[in-house]
Length: 321
Ligand SMILES: Nc1ncnc2c1ncn2[C@@H]1O[C@H](COP(=O)(O)OP(=O)(O)OP(=O)(O)O)[C@@H](O)[C@H]1O
Image (cartoon, rainbow, N blue to C red; front, side, top):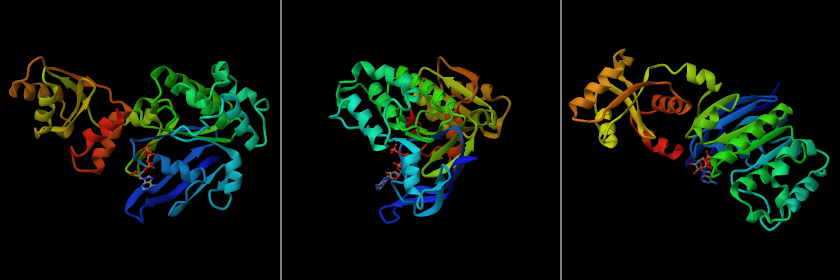
C-alpha cells in the first residue's frame, strides 16, 4: 500500500508568477524511507506543506496514510509527524517543556511511546532543563525529531533535517532514521546533500519544481548512460574553461578539486582525448582518470538533458555543495 500518493500536483505563488511545484507525481510505500533530493528553491518545502495540510495545491490530488489532504486534513494531522526545515520549537521553553507540549497537543505523553524516542531522547536528556533556543544545532535537530515522534506518527515528514548540522550529527541522524524505519514508520525526507540520497530506499530528483526521476539510488547510479572522467591540472579554472569550450567535450563541471567530464559521442578514448586537449592548451600537472558516477553526477546529467548544455550547471552544483 502507498502511504503517500502525489498526483499531478501544481503549486504557484504570486498569482501564478512563481512556479514552485510543476505537475509532480510520486508515491511512497508503507514503511519506506523516501528522499526528495534537490537544491534550494526546487520545491521541496512546498510539497511538504501540501502533504502536511498547511498549504493548498493549485491543482492535483494527494493523500497521506489513505486520507485526502483536503477532505481529511484533520485525520492527516493526527497521523503524521512533521519536522519543518526551520527550527520550529519554542525557543523559550526547555527541552522537557517542548516535549510535554507536543505530547499534550496530541493527547499523549512522553512515556506512552518512549520506545520510539528512547535512543534520541537519551542524547538530549542531560539538557532537559535547558531552553531550546540555547541548544546546539545537532541537539535542536534531535529535540525537533523527538517532538515530531512523540505521538507515534504513521508517516514522518522531515524537511531538510540535516541542513546546517555538522557531519557527525548528520551521520547519527541517518542512523536514527534507519531505526525508525525498522519500527514501521513511513518517512519522507528532503535534503540538498547528494551524499545522503544513497541512504534512502528510493529517491526523487527534483529541480525547479519538476521531478526528473524517481528510482532507487542503486538504479540511478547503475544506469548512468556514458563514461565519466575526472581531471585536474595546475590551473583548474582555466582547464574548466578550455574543456567546456572544446567541441569534443560534452559536459565539464567542477567537483571539489577535480573536474568531472563526459565526452561528445561517449568515445572510447575519452581519457586520451581529455589529456590531448589539456596538453594542446598548455596545461601542466595534468591528471585524468575514469570515474564511477555519484548521485550528483546523475542529477547534473538529468538537469543537462532538460536545458541547453553548460547553463546553470555550475550554479546548481555550487548550491548543492
Ligand atoms: N510564499 C511564497 N511566495 C512566493 N514564492 C515562494 C513562496 N514560497 C516559496 N516560493 C518560491 O517557490 C520556489 C520553491 O520554493 P520551496 O521553498 O518550495 O523550495 P525548496 O526546495 O524547499 O527550497 P528551500 O530549501 O530554499 O526552501 C522557490 O522559487 C521559492 O522562492
